[in-house]
Image 1 (spheres, rainbow, N blue to C red):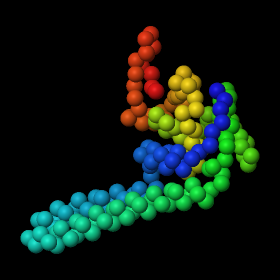
Image 2 (cartoon, rainbow, N blue to C red; image 1 turned 45 degrees about the horizontal axis):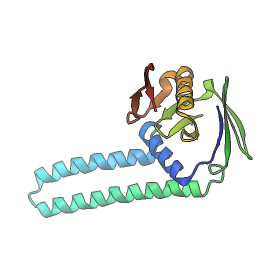
Image 3 (cartoon, one colour; image 1 turned 90 degrees about the vertical axis):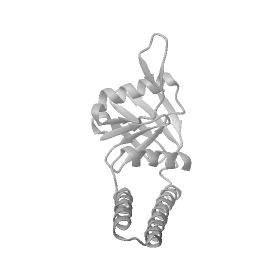
Image 4 (cartoon, rainbow, N blue to C red; image 1 turned 30 degrees about the vertical axis):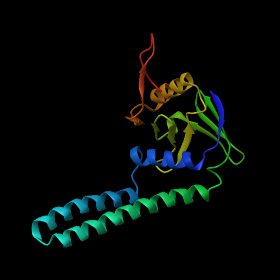
Length: 183
């Protein structure tokens, strides 16, 4: 399997969402979880302790606005990271080799060996290959055939095993004479 790809801002945002869902958590994700949990706890406490419903509603509205602001800040941070990083936007030659994945561009030549892949995450559109918890290579699926996609997914499962995560929303289909296959 050999193809070229270039990551767009849309690809980067989608891959980042997939990373946030299945990858390592970061301070931003933890902060959102803490605020969400605090919101639920405060709603319960205020509803029990204070009969003044205006105060309860005011606190709830403030916390919801804070969550929305944090979400928008996160999206802007990811867009800014894409805009300011020329490395992400380069045309990449991807080649599947027996010892791993070869990624080549004007500025880098990387053989990502199977034993060095920390984990992978897969959905209908991308494979995220983790060289470390913070270094992720985004590989789009749209440029390969379904057969090549299935083959690469099986190779990842074979070499990475339990460190791999497949998005539960991926579509499953039955082909005549085939076992279940992921699209």
